[in-house]
Image (tube, rainbow, N blue to C red; front, side):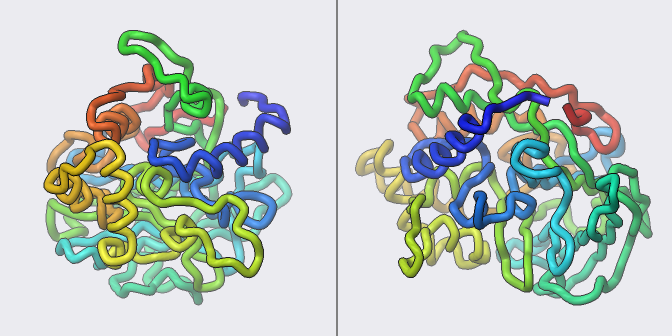
Length: 352
């Protein structure tokens, strides 16, 4: 595992939050994206780092959903998942109304002495099926770090894996943007996350075109949520200090909100950020705002193409979003994927 000094780790935390208020792609896709997720008060086990959705490379009749949590697993935390009254969920919209029609809810037991946890997964059609209570409509159970077969087909894996995200974080924090053709190191090389990898038959959705997002819940409260990469990190302003008794930061409000309310609650923030780079081109800005919100990852599961059709593990989303957000002024961070992804479940590279 990549070794990081304590000062660098907490420097990253501070800079992540401080730079999050600038309208540029920030520390990572969604790593430590809000003050409510960072130590000492926040629980990184409930912090969603990335969400992926793509056609299975091993079976084109299946769809793969991946949620990363626990940024810097093994450095900021022990790599386990939050137990007790906590859950992790994939939300699936099958009719385009930004409301979930299917929910895959995953829960974990307390870890044993070796760090292994029991895993349960249920599939439910009602909206709030992941807000607590006993597991209903369970389709699988097993242990972390093993492949769990699901009723009706499909597989689940949960455990510490290589962080698939790649980005020149140090260059960004120094505002040192690269020139095309230059090679920059991936800050996240050698770092791990806790990953939940779910593969299910696409026929379960009843349509080829779905919307996907993930959320984490604790004590019936939504803690974090994510669809497309970097929406909260880039477009939602932050109050990194957030003194007690003041209005919560917009980043925390965004994480606790529902996608179907994004246009009403957060569109102005997205438009304001885009105008910094597009000037008064209202037509373009408003068209982009309609693409970016609601924060849902849309995917045609019959099509193997990547981002913006879902998101594959090797998709260079930073390059795509740099070009989008800066109106082509910056097109790359000069970092290439260095993870050894596989074509077999669970697809991620092993932990470092």
